[in-house]
Image (cartoon, rainbow, N blue to C red; front, side, top):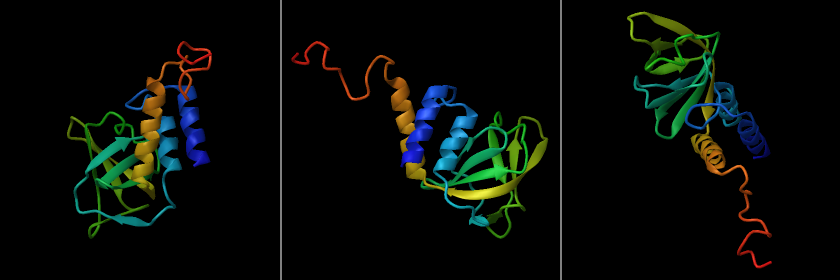
Length: 158
């Protein structure tokens, strides 16, 4: 829990972009902090429930609403951050690290395969909670203390 909080605070200090206001590197660290140990493969029935690019060398892929994986790629996948869609290669309904690929689908017919180096299952609830905390902290005015009004504010009884 301390590690998650330190990453969240680091993300707030650095600023950035996207839905949580974090840079790709900060989002990647948040996902890494909420990922389990590497696994050799995961079950995949040809349908991606959702995905989040985490820079040009990693992507989070949801296979079910409560099942997601962090895919770290062998190298940069230039089209990944701006791609409107992705696909995954698979073998016998499984996606394998060091064998299968992420395909960034761009507006042209060219698809560049990006090899999957590592697969780590994500704690989806922890990722959502960490992202929620970041959004909540960003929405809080900079001069507003986290624990509510200070003792010297009007209505505090002092």
